[in-house]
Length: 315
Image 1 (cartoon, rainbow, N blue to C red):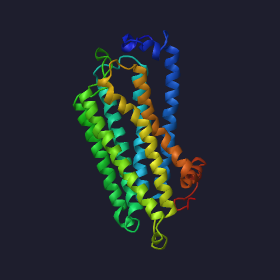
Image 2: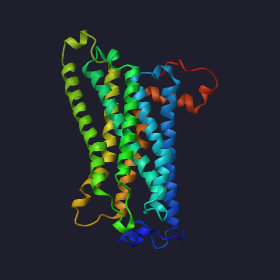
Image 3: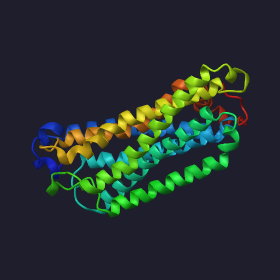
Image 4: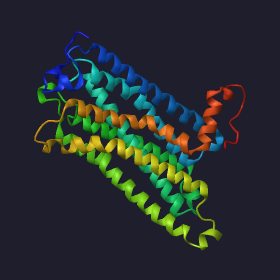
């Protein structure tokens, strides 16, 4: 690695992120981040194949999970390689096409993930709070409309933020960002949807507690055990998402108020924490969903390629 990273001139950057001879560490960083990318792609491919192939899983909730898995897959395929180059290689803090493309996909996919989680929380709200009318309210067509709106809005937010001048920064500006566009983007793409989701899940929690204690629910077709488990699992998915995303967004929002510029390595670490969320979701599904474990066994063993198993009843 002969070129010197243009941000090496920043205070403490060299000592915090790279040694005096960064070539070995560059290789190690590429290997680790490359491994994370492969795990992310493989895990979300399993989710996508499972839901698409097995007809038992063709329900509105799973279609929303499928959309989330597609967003997570794009993180592994597109965002990981761009971010690896952004973190490790040289000459990436200039206003060029590479940075614009990287930022656009980063914003769009991240926004799509949280909007998909918003749709999932709405689905869970109807399943728990209105169980008798859920199947007629949240249909496959409704789920399709929600997915279309989610990706359309995410794409528009991505375009809007890029056109407003957002980027990961230039070395002349101390590797900071255009704060106005970034803060506005963080509010509309993260904090507002996150607040809505939290309100919905709090409402779901109180309704579920009330229904659990109601004698009438036991005789009037209340919430099934499967619906409760699905809601719990997807609430955990949302919680993990917030834990991974919140530190980075809080950092960039409060960055203008800081008396000193935080180390570049800290900002990059928080950014990679946000990206790691896309790797974690399949593990959550595998831990809580028996149908996902069964589907994975059939896919990884190659059983689905030896015959027609689309109608198989998954445990």
